[in-house]
Length: 303
Image (cartoon, rainbow, N blue to C red):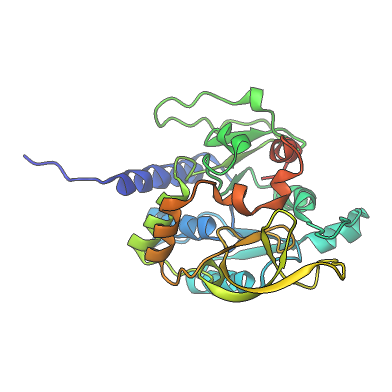
């Protein structure tokens, strides 16, 4: 008797679906953190496969910095409406006013570190006990330390020394009152895996993932930052028109573009096969604040 053939994408998909169903089975009030970026979009496709024809057993939640790319926000709203799922949006701007937080300074004022405050407020508001996210271990070394079920204490903080063993496909979601778990169903995927899955499933994406003309600021590092109203530029800054795309989407003040003519997913995959740096390493300026920049933010509650 022959056995069905599963390629590696089938196996990654099956693992992620299993994890999503474990979340639904183990937690009372989970949420799926949804930015409108490629990884969270893939998570919604996986959730469809895990739970349709029923509704998702969790809402979609977005922490909006106020500095997001307009194309991504429009896509976020469109996809949530097409899915027919609840979308909860909470604003960093509101948190800044409510908690009297200090706005970031400098030429490229990223609000990414302030997302932590809004996320923790949102978790408390809705009493979420699990938050599903699209982080992957190949993105950054601090994320490589995470388990798939990653426990946060009652203050939302992460301690890498408190990581629980995960043997085979057994996940321990037991937590104390006030704690929550961050769950990463695509931890074992790579950027290339994500794009090959998007290709296989014919998943629509925001337009900024593909090559397009954009006015950019040339940084001292040579990176290209899309010109936007939140930047505080000097007269000496070099402004150029380039054909670019974005490998990841985040705060527009700290997410650099890469030069590319890639108009299709096939083109993007061909680009990635030649890339030597992860998408965060190549484009996220806020990860380069210090050697342990991402880990410090994660310890304080960053997703």
